Length: 162
Length: 99
Image (cartoon, rainbow over all chains, first blue to last red; front, side):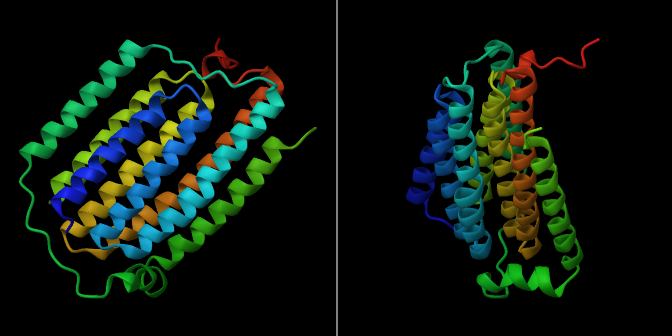
């Protein structure tokens, strides 16, 4: 699936950038490290065999959502007139809860016996388009586009000037 | 590496995201941490889809990405609205609904 050295590089890099995303004081740099995490996750998708999904992740997430976040942060800086407050509060209880969740997840992962990985029959790039456009997922896909339209209207209504 | 490695990466991302959501003061920082949570959930879908040889595991991350776009757009619009009406972007100071 993915060789060991490459996997360790991915693990270290994703952990590092996730920590930077959560702990960096400057929201701008935090958003940029989020972009790195999403980019590396896209390559993980590709290594899992979902190539189409991987490139969608890179195009949409890194190219769309992160750019949107960066735009908002830059706009907010202009709008507010000073750098945004980005401190932390309630660190002990946050560390406690996320630590419990982490230990629980690790315990579950290490206890469970997973079956052997099976192979796909088709070529990976065709899988996702075939599933969406030639099976039951066409209707949810169209409903998703309606949801996007509704979110667009909602955002415009909320953010416009009086 | 097998499936457990991918799940480990996803678990690390998830718990860091939970920490970010719980501890960030500014609402923008909380939204960025929520992106991490979404991402780890999507990674899990893809990993289990690969484990069982089921290509439908890649459809749900696609829908997840679409829903994230909506969430980010509306979330940031709400933050701007809050700043205009309450002059703050800190999540703790927004307590209009408090009795």
